[in-house]
Image (cartoon, rainbow, N blue to C red; front, side, top):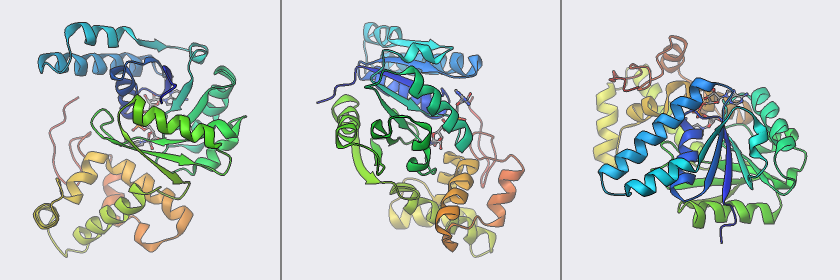
Length: 288
Ligand SMILES: NC(=O)c1ccc[n+]([C@@H]2O[C@H](COP(=O)([O-])OP(=O)(O)OC[C@H]3O[C@@H](n4cnc5c(N)ncnc54)[C@H](O)[C@@H]3O)[C@@H](O)[C@H]2O)c1
């Protein structure tokens, strides 16, 4: 049974605002903190827009949408997290930034609160050094877009207590209505350990002239039933995110399948991150 009714989220970017929205829709109180006031305002606007769209689609009543929005508190300091039973960090994938945020979080939440990281590729055990009570620290790896993606990888470290893992599992399952998988702290966990080498193989195939982008994507869509081809998927994940995940996993494993091919590296160096910038392996219309 879920015991979490108040969640703090640090970082209100793509993932943080999605985690916040999912918790709000599940009836929880949410405190959202970001070092950027602009990011916080954008996150509130984004969540409000999504809730309103659900009202138009008659998935929520206007009253429910307004109640959910009223349960969202945006905060300019971490002191606002004192009443949260769970705090999740979703700040950029930079070890030093995450360690500083986690150390600060540990000072501001109650001694009984669970602290979690949404890291994609930094070993959760390495992040645990930022937290005083390591038994209450673990990974909760959500997928983008969070409100729509049903899986959460709950990552336990050698320090995580069984009780903390059970609280996180119940939060995901009976709290958010998503599906948790409990896994050990391995590079890429399960999903990225399988997905990233696949995306890099598609990029390598394109880079070597083995096949055109459209041929690669169409083949995997129609031949394997994938909803989108690997190059389109990489563009939607963000080529910068794919590259960073590959580099981090390669740093841990030295697996040649995780070496970033030149075409992908050059696109990222040129600032062509995929759908969010309008150009990646393919051309995209930018929305926001
Ligand atoms: N984007 C994805 O598809 C995805 C999927 C799963 C996991 N993740 C992981 O989630 C985390 C966040 O990724 P994202 O895509 O949401 O990033 P993002 O860049 O969209 O958002 C990060 C937010 O953190 C804020 N921030 C930066 N430094 C901060 C600090 N010191 N204190 C408070 N806020 C700070 C930024 O202002 C920004 O709003 C990363 O660890 C990433 O690896 C991302």
